Length: 103
Image 1 (cartoon, rainbow, N blue to C red):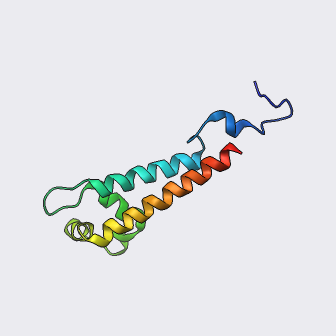
Image 2: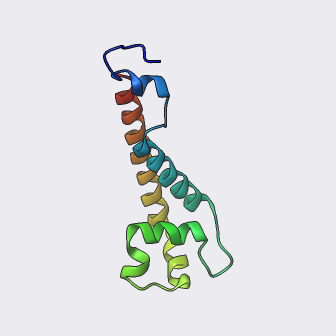
């Protein structure tokens, strides 16, 4: 049962970390970005996770990129930098939501 007989005000604290739908979505996106940063596809082709990230960013379909073009972009230093910044941002957002949940 609930510790607060008047309602579920403390429900967020009881359920633990990473349980809200927003947190789960952030964790999934974070996992995709980390995988895209670390995986390499076949020679001349980008990995599936890199293609998935490009699709999430809207680059893959908007520019009608071929897998070879995606591979060229994925091998640029700027791509790695973008992924690292996004990972850092998502981790900060997740930490904020976890802190907010504990209150």
